[in-house]
Image (cartoon, rainbow over all chains, first blue to last red; front, top):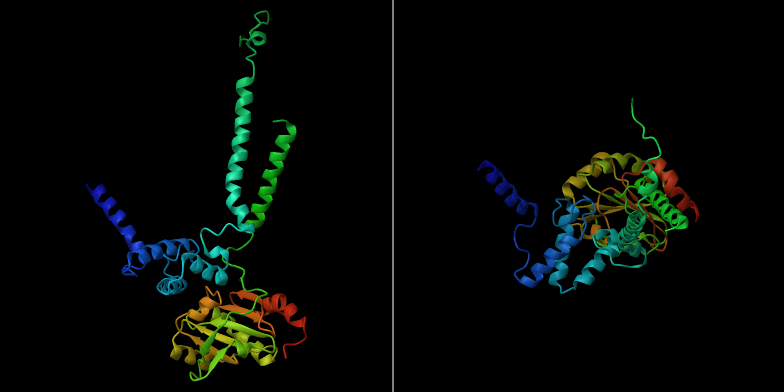
Length: 147
Length: 178
């Protein structure tokens, strides 16, 4: 029972990670966009966190700016562009697929494909090898024993 | 797959290894500024010491300047302060400050106590100007040329070695910043 209690507490506690506990917007659509955007923006000060989760000044300031931009009617693209203009593409967890970032996007798939092909090749050769039991099992050869 | 194929794969693997090893030596917390070689962002702030006056891009025009982002709560700013005072006293380059996310009284007291190396400091209470400059942690120092183009950004405290290595070559290009 204790385990269940601990588990329940831990699971509920995750909701405390979001810094903004109150809704930012009355409007559901804006609120949804806000929540989506703040998860996509990296907190450049605490780089392992999004600005949704970070306590840093920068994160709070950026959340405020995003709320302002949303209430001014900017689109998601315009908001991301605003951030990238000031902080560079690293500010977004999913940078736009431009020339430079294309390598970043494609590399994992390319590596997986290459690895997969290699593996397929190796496996295919293994199963294609004839079993050379005839030669190895030649009874005319004395078998070695450890006498 | 023949030998050529295997060699190609191994070659690719080694190439990746090299790229990643180089990458490991880089510090991901030091992000390049997207403003390098571009016009400095527009800003217009009340002056810290004379709130009725303002500083902005016009203040930076006509000669090379430093824009230093600082705050009283920032440990690195305290570290670099001595060097900034030296730099200001040498008259090499005018230094403008952006007092970022700070308390005005604290900031004024700080400058009184430790000295004021700035021609003027702008008071950026809510961090809006900081965001416009792409600031994410104080201290940060921007080198801006005569035309208001950002030519360098330094993250972290300034010091003489950093100054000599990164800033002097950029300033000497066009003569002294007069």
